[in-house]
Image: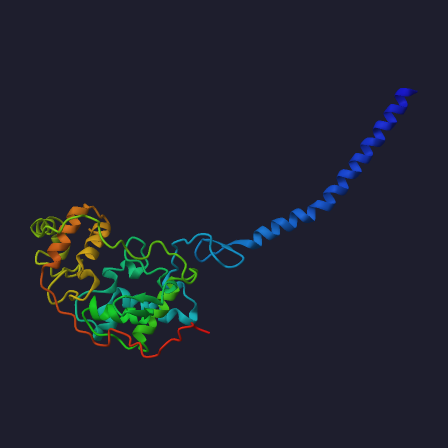
Length: 302
């Protein structure tokens, strides 16, 4: 009899415990589901960049993934495609503003869409930016006008021209998904190679003859596959590439194109050699400085 009572008591206890388990999971499951939903809403994948975004829209990482020009929405596709063509065939599509035989894509490979180059992906998120050359903040339009004057040895298209406006649309499209003023690690290049010596021009001439001439020509005036590095059809002495420190870093990182292999010393020496060659003189076609004529109250902006 005692064994029977014990068995019945055990069954009752097990039934009570089972009922408690059922009620416990019915009560906690909505909480678990809500937690899952909250996590899903606070961190979502941005399909445009492949980055993970918080519910405040700030990415937890920035991924290099520029959209193709032809994938632009119908309303802006024509302007995006024209901007890309101006970048890659500059003399054909903006010839009246170009004074040399270069295209923008000679420095910004694939119209700035390549990462291993002076990339333009994300540049629309970084401007306006302070420019020491102007001693003021400049937007992308002013920055691009300067490129036409210097790197293209030409003249600046008007800000409201089809050329500048199509380039603006293009910059913004390939920067799609990158938040304003977010850190974009692939933009720009180092300031110099940090070699504590001056370039050896004689050694640089040999590097040019052994490595560079096969594409840029023995006289440095360019060929069908590579642009001129000096002479009347090259960039002028106001261009960024006319700085030895800039040209040497670009050469070390990206040249020869598709298979860079120069040492830092070789890059510095050949940059010095190229810099020593004749080229056009920069002539400004619009004011370089922005006049500070409107005073700002000392107590700050209100």
